[in-house]
Amino acid sequence: MAQHGPAPSRICPDCDGFPTVAIDTGTLLDDGTRATLLVTCRRCRGTGSTRTAAPASVVLRGHA
Image (cartoon, rainbow, N blue to C red; front, side, top):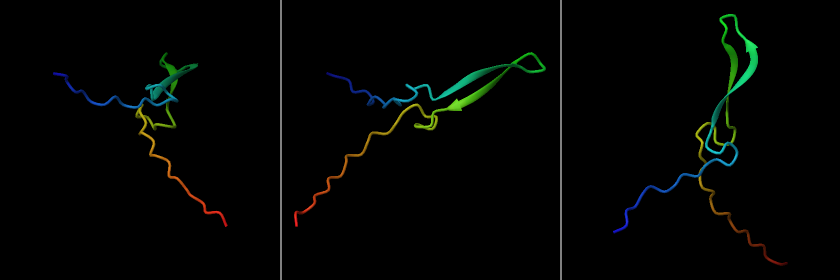
């Protein structure tokens, strides 16, 4: 008998599932560590996945 698993999540097309990244600025701080910026994906807002799109509504226009 086939086993059912959870539906695969929709991976964000902008970040490919890597929603938060640390970018090295190249600057050394006084304690010897590097300054980094944490940046999150704008589309998925840091979740790494997107919702499925709602079906588009159809607009019918009558001919006058």
